[in-house]
Length: 400
Image 1 (cartoon, rainbow, N blue to C red):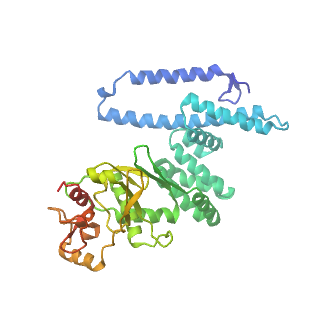
Image 2: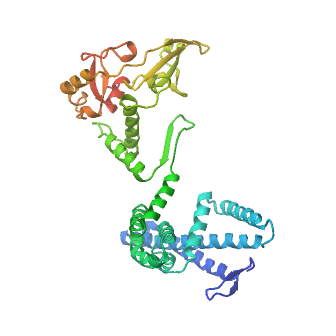
């Protein structure tokens, strides 16, 4: 096949103009569609247009995947003529084609690889391929089902395909992937275990600091590990306090912080020469003199005001430095709230003590009241009270 030819629907070779003409018809149809402003459509018209666009998008995505796979296969075959070294040349040509597609189509490396992989999977004729080309199955579900079919024995493959095809048309990608795992576990438990092990090998997590000092946490887990983390986040997700209106991602972020605090306060993390992990805050002496200025929180620069609310018992140490960074004073690690004091506060306060706040004690911190912790305030019943995270921060920053 030469580069100025393509395969006709009947299987023969046709000039590339055949495909170009068809693409011209497609562009003309899109032009006619966008001529009518969407603002002129009624609700029924808008819903009908969205449904049709989604179906066409699926069909075009499947077509793009086939085209990507066919193009890379063509380039690979042209470079690999069977001579010594031609296989390496074919790999180089394939990578060059991927790079060109990224530049020409503004695709990411993952998008190119996923399109090529899906195109190879759709090359197998059958009900799945037909349904995907017709726009009835989302490409992600087609990819998941194709991967399942490649893992099971040929004698049960057709029955499994028919069984899962209807689910592939209606279920979201996450739900459908779980359905496929269930079917694989029924048909071939050993292969299901190998597939789960392969998923586990793809696990990863990272904790990085962004350019503006935010801590970014990203992880992908599977199986028991994923279920464990989901359950822990749910367990530590506290309700909003009165006047606090968090978006779901913010509530999740707060739950992750609560999990870390609980682990450091009551867990048994690894120690460093007998010292449990704790956060070190380095305060230049000038910041203390001025009452403001920068401090260093384990490598992150913050204003002094940002550390005025402290996490009791989480393990915080302070290092006061002179002008040239020489340590001149080190604090003792803040003490953990005694069990007796905690029980007394639960009995006395029961909820957050802020006006109108009924966040239960289990979700509250122990706040220093009249004499702050930074001024040597003691952990006594008279100088403490329960405060939810929202009101604790507000109190320490003078907003209550």
